[in-house]
Length: 152
Image (spheres, rainbow, N blue to C red):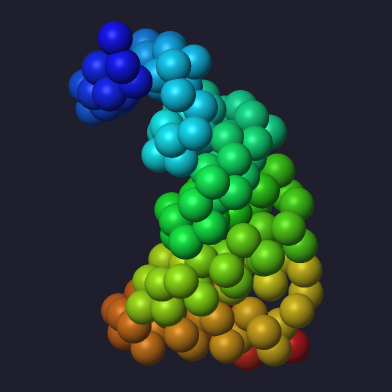
């Protein structure tokens, strides 16, 4: 069997919200070919959903090492680092992600949240403004923007 069989089976499990089964399938695929970045990304997604964020970081990091232009890997690593309250590292990931996909309102928003957590309010303000530029109806970006302007 090749890795594609296990990846496809893992995707079916993932779509059915059978995350543990999906992770087992993705791991089987990785055991066959560990050089496929998307497999590491899928494992990271599973581990993040399972609350195993340290592992999610490792899988996401491996995915982006294998393919440095994979914005989803940078995003996923940033999200897990944010949950782990490792905001400085998360900022690095989100900065790279917005460099690769500058029109993603979510990436700008998450970058803003991490910068705000680090009390880098001027930079956070700019990130939230970018999210709002992309989607003028982003209520949470407006909320954070207002918080920064009101309290700094």
